[in-house]
Image 1 (cartoon, rainbow, N blue to C red):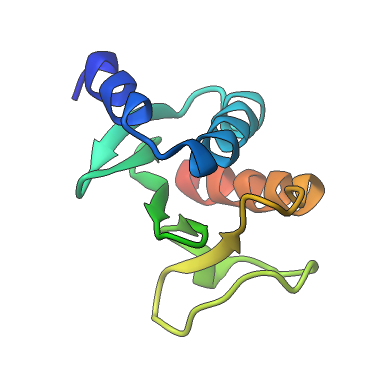
Image 2: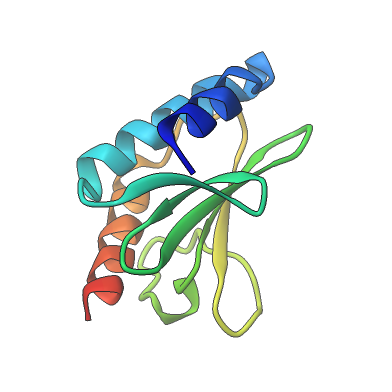
Length: 115
């Protein structure tokens, strides 16, 4: 996928979700500068050596899922999910982002991807 694909995806976001997505993109740029933005399974995602994280949109929230989140240490208690690999955080547009927790999760994703 090209940046053009990502830009097109972002332009089509509903207004109520675009702020959350913009904030997540900035967090990823800061916390995982080596990750590439891609479109995976029709959604915005970030790729290192492997998939790090992916967004999923619903009418009420944005789900920020970590491909290897089940391996994380969750000091913040925000990760949800019961599968073998993925864990996610649901983010509502009206809420403020839990920046410190998300930075920690992104950092753990990058470390796992490098190891």
